[in-house]
Image (cartoon, rainbow, N blue to C red; front, side, top):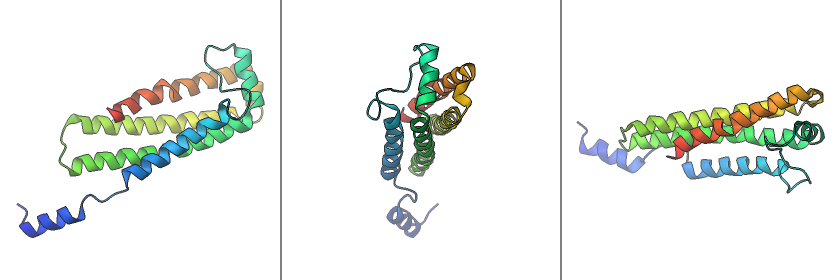
Length: 163
């Protein structure tokens, strides 16, 4: 059993760790900034949708390799603060005595989402390298991998973190 002195010391110091608000802002800024180069804000084209014809998907990656590379870099960078945010929030919940399974579900969701963003960004960076987009079948396969990992592969676990 803790003595009154140790309880006061614990209450006065509070939870030690990164400020989750600042980490969340850094994640959001990097994530959104990563979307800017591949939207209509920068050029007349945008990141292709899976329903677009294969020729348009291949042509996009051939023509917009620099924008795709910048997007991939910023998206990869956003994965780090997302993982840190997850760890900080789970740590805070445990510090405040939360023992529900939801804490571990949030941990699973956040870390999975962080890994999905990082993996999707790495595949996106790969597709933007010289010569890769010259092979139409490879470009489409990598594109659908990016979409699967960065779409539902990211958003479903991110939803578990938020929930």
